[in-house]
Amino acid sequence: MAGEAQPIVNDLVSFKSISLLTDFTVRIDAGSVIRQASAPPQEFLELTASPVGEAVRFFIQPEDMSVFTAAKERALHTGEKQSFVSRLLRQRVLPVWMDCHILYLEGRNEYVFVAYDASHWKENETRLTHLSTHDALTGLPGRGLLCDRVNSSIKTGSREKNNVVIFSLSLNGFKKIIDSFGYGVGDQLIKAVVERLQEIIRRCDTMARVSRDEFVLVMMVSSWRKDIDLVSRKILATVQRPFQIQGRSMYMSISLGAAAYPDHGADCGVLLGHAETAMHSASTHGKNRWELYHLQLDGDGKGALSLESAMHEGIKNGEFLLHYQPVFCMQTGVLKGAEALMRWDRPGQGLVSPGVFIPLAESSGLVEMLGAWALRTACHQAKQWQMKIADFYISVNVSPRQFRQEDFNNLVDKALEESQLASPSLMLEITEGVLMRDPEEAGTILHGLRAAGVKIAIDDFGTGYSSLAYLKKLPLSVLKIDKSFVDDVPQGTEDVAIVLAILGLAAGLELQVVAEGVETAEQLAFLKSKGCDLVQGYLTGRPMDAASFQEKLIK
Image (cartoon, rainbow, N blue to C red; front, side):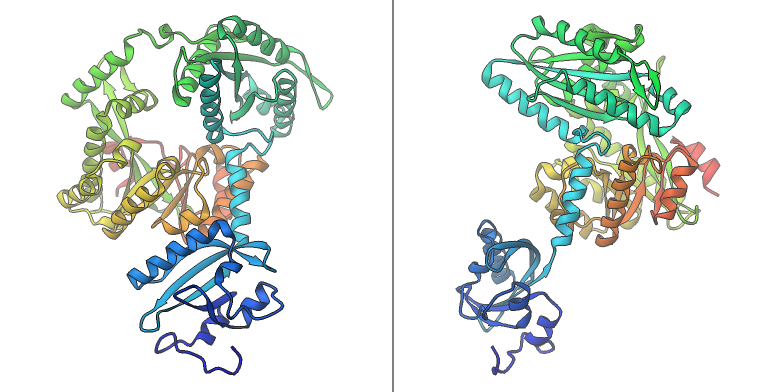
């Protein structure tokens, strides 16, 4: 308060000095009553009188008091500064997001509580969340949000004894239209297709855009066996009518695949996969038709079991190998590292798609064995290439199941020790979905890895739900922009907006950014002009085996 001597927080910094650097600084006692407040809190919160003598809870959003209390308890028991995000109340009623810190003053049984205006962070977070979960062109949910809608429909369907039908829809020949008339016409056509489809679905149904020319419809029906043919034919007929785009009549056809809960699966991933399988089959057999998923589309109904057995044999016979995709400095073109990608060279069949064997390895548990092998192999290879390129790093993908292994951190330590690779030369790529499944457990694992010196990258960034407040607490090094956001830059305004938002976020968090899936010189030039750090994609180098990588890139 005015007239009082400034109490000393420590030997170097006074309370007044701290308050000049913050938007909100108060000293509180053990009961959380404000004992001292400088001018900024009163000005920032637009208070008519000094808050001294009042409980700090009167200035914190009630829903956030538990966060404040927990941070205060941690500060008391650890003696260290605790950081958190909460809302303070301007004029005692208007919540303002703040970046908060609290420190226990040993010997005084008091605390210093400081906060900075974080409203710009929350605005950016809200904008980025919407951009990353919705298609900016159409406003439809994207693939990330889609699974939430599907799982919610499954719960409702299970409770009400209804079926849920998933339709996977692909526009035939859409790329030719873009090549002939440009992205502007393509965007208008997409909007027109969406408007037309919205005329035939109900408010309770969900439509999502999952790629440039693919959509998913989620519908609740009383009996899919009775309704699915009628709905499918209605969808086909709706899109067949000509579209008027810039004075031209354009005709579209679609390939449609369908799968139903509970007959064809009980979770989002399985149902979407089966609907897409049926859609691809419809496309293969003539387009402008629909197909219902059935086991024969996967070959043999026992195919998954047979494939799992083949994978066991493949591991024993050394059929699995790593390919390496180079990562270059965006600004200089210098080779910086590589991402290790698992491949299965099955005798008599060639390379098996990772999209086929990785999900099966994950569900069967084989991914733990394969992941450990991939990690060791990649570390040994990187150490060998460092003899030519001293600062070369290797990036290795971590699967959800592998990340949750109890001994995962020990597994990483062992791979580094055996290969003698320095820990900063190893980067582990983990998707947002894995981190958000159990944020507290993920944070503990990541902090352990970072303490050992290993770098952490969020793979496919922008496709999940990670919040800025959560990201700030993680020991991250890199954000990898998902290929789906790179595909249409610089022409696609929605993807440009997402990429710029991610680059801005990374700059604020002092993280490097890797752009994945760069395939054109235009994409490269745009990303370079916007300050992206690293590039990876077919334009700069396709994945290749170790021998080819060494011959072409390691000098």
